[in-house]
Image (cartoon, rainbow, N blue to C red; front, side, top):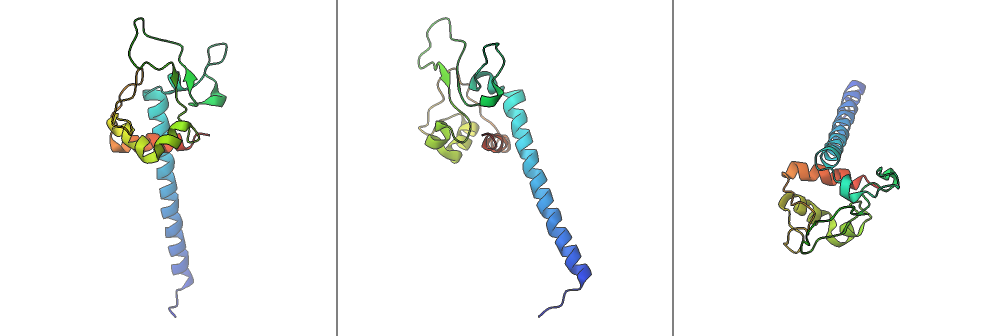
Amino acid sequence: MTYMPNLQRILLFGSICGLFAAGTAAQENKVEYGRYLVEEVAKCHDCHTPKLPNGELDRSRWLKGATLDFQPMTPIERWHKTSPDLTPKGRLWQRWGEEAILKYLQTGLTPKGNPADPPMPGYKLKPKDAEAVLEYLKTLK
């Protein structure tokens, strides 16, 4: 049996805790970066969050899908009047799964290989950005 002095044990424990804390901080940063991309850059909530009667976003139903309050002046083929729930409990996650959502964020293509129907823009994110968006979406209830 190898003897490990108390100081070495303390240093080893401290190193392990430091690695765990660094990993946790990195994950929190990834989630925060994903939140920034979703809310401040892409403004996903504008279409994917229902509005209250006063026009404000319903924070209790954040990114849970909504009826769109706009439409094209002339008909556009496959135009959607609603947006899907982007939370992990939504049908999109159930039908596509994490990997397909990640792939969609990077390629702009659905699991069937088609672009999303309008008015959804065809985002093509870098892998790091797509992973951050996915990590943020996974935190939503």
